[in-house]
Amino acid sequence: MIGTRLRTLLASPGVTLAVAVVLGWLAIAVIWPLLVPYGPTAQQLGGRYAPPSAEHWLGTDNLGRDVLSRILAGSRSVLIVGLASTTLGVAVGTTLGLVAGFYRGRVDELLMRSLDLLMAFPIIVIASVILAMLGPSRLNLVLVIALMLAPYNARVVRSAVLSWRDRDFVAAARLRGESGAYILFRELLPNIMGTVNVEFTMRLALSIFAVATLSFLGFGIQPPTPDWGLMVSEGRPFYQIAPWVVVAPAAAIASLVVAINVVAQRLRAS
Image (cartoon, rainbow, N blue to C red; front, top):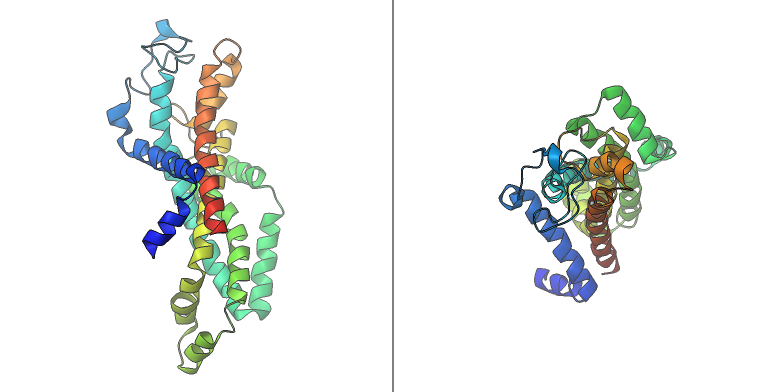
C-alpha cells in the first residue's frame, strides 16, 4: 500500500522534482559541514561584494563572507526550527481538534472561540509582538510559530473528526467502556491521519516562510548564525551593488517553500 501511494505521489514529474528539492535541502541540512567551501562566518574584508565567480560561486556579502557557504549552512537552522514548530503546532492542534470534535457541547464552544481569537490576528504580527517581549531565540521562535499554527490545524482536524465520531466503531468502543483518550487516539486518530499528514506538510511550508520572515524582521535567528531570512535582511541595503546577496537566499527560501507546497497539494489531491 505504501508503495502504491508513493507511486501515485510521484506520478507527476513536477511532484517528483518537488520531492527531490525537499529531500535535497534535508540532506544539505545534515551534511552541510562537508559541502561548504568556506566557513559560513569567516570574513574576508578585502573581498567584500565579490561577484559570483569560480572562487565564490554565489559571490560574497558586505563582510566578505561566502554566500554559498552561508546558504548551505543556513538550511539547518531553517529546517530545524520549521520542523520543530510544525511538529509541535500540529500535535497541539490535532489534540485540540480531536477533543473539540469528539466532545462537542461546551468544550467545543470554549476551544473554538479561543482559537478563533488567536486566528483573528495575523500570524507574523502577533509572533513579532510576542518575540519582542520574550526576546529572540530559537526556542521562543519554535514556541511562537507552533502557537500560531495550532488553531488552523485544530479547525481542520475538528471537521474531520465530526465525520467520524458517530460511526459504529466509535459507538462500539463506548459500549466496551473505553476511555475518552482511548477513543480519541486509538479509534479516531488513525482514521484521520491522512488529513493530519496533509496538514503537516502545508503547515511546514508556512512555518519555514514564517521563520524566514521573522528572521528578516529581526525577531528570529540572530547574527552571526547563518539564516536565509537574516541574509536577505542584511543584504537588502546593498542590493543595488551586490544583488546576489539578496537573490540567492531569497531563491533558497522560495525553492523550499514552493516544493513543499507542491507536495502538499499532491497529497491533498490523492
